[in-house]
Length: 529
Image (cartoon, rainbow, N blue to C red; front, side, top):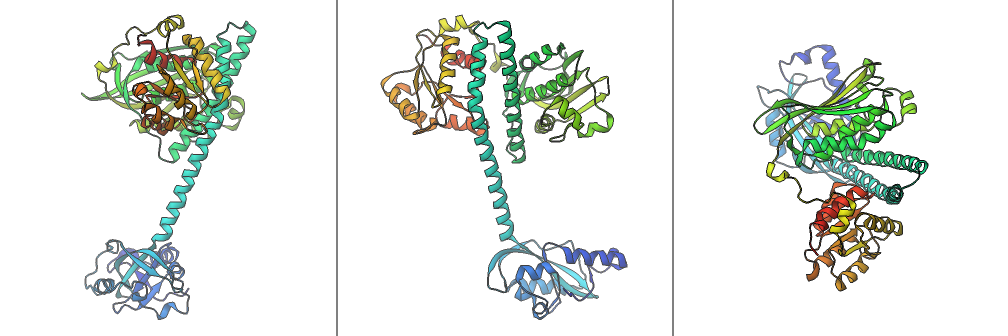
């Protein structure tokens, strides 16, 4: 499109006087995605770019005959534009007027929401005004499409998680129960392999979900008061099998100045430590893996701690270290084939550390091992909230005595899910639970029977777990009955939905003997019958 005139931002602009600079400015003007319109002091259109013609539906023949009023119909804009164009002492072109919204009209009569910003400009030595117009209708539609795509992706991943976790609940639950039934050494080894493969698959699912939440900006921390020793112990317990399998020794050390009672998200701290520890075990064939915590900085109300995982593994070449925390990356393709893994753990760890006000890094030497580290800013905990639990059961036989006579209702629509939970309750606490296959049946059972605990699946036909919990909670006999939500979904909002429906706690599938034991200890063992 032929746009007459040479454009420069303002008088005295050094960058506009050079031929190269002017040529670059002209190129930027023509390629700008926004509609650019330049008018003289009388409002006549003297320059435009192709984006302006396309936005308003005009062509090379019609554009030269138009004025600024044909594009900015609001009469209030013309005096502003002409006043800017007529200024004797022109300000910098960056001093644009604030964006103003108006209803713009195309040549074919169609309208759209637009935003315009006005500013002074100089064209062939004459003062003019430039209007920058943005099609806000298209921008809003683009944002809506992007949000819809994010929602669709999130919904798909939630459904995928649910569909995978449901059979995983049966696989892992039944494997745990078989391991507890005194199998032969060969059977125990094979069942251990099944459990290890299942945990590996579950870890990949959780990483994909975390990555999805990171991309959607929905990955959040859930800070609570916690004991630092418990976090390291839990991470070591998770890593113990992989260390033992490879013959590695593992140790942990907390610096003497590090406070032991803290406030933060212990689950996310543990997740990073497990990510680092799993990688250390994967790439170490002999030697040791050490977990360390050091004090970096301290104030009366917060501390910055440095967590380290040191190994004696193969190490990472210096030229490859910058790729370590990149999504879907390992240091080379051969490592991916030899050691496996989608390459998500370190990237997620970096994001989690930044959420906690910290950073991540690695020091390594090929053949000598590596130290992966991250820092986190944590606040002081309320020591009174972390008193030791009193009279906790010390064994399953002790728990069975504490839970003797307890009435439990298990609500689960999947037959395998009912079998796993029912057998776990029997093994852990000697409880023969009543069962219901949907929310309607659960409500009817609760009307005719008092229960000491209700385990409630969330997604069921006829009536879901949230609605069933609300109906049961409204019954006078169950106003205070503990209701524990069971769900194969792993998003934090699922836990909140359980609480909003009147449930007391949320238990994620696949169920584990340890997690169910903890729930029974909290809600049944302390009760008297």
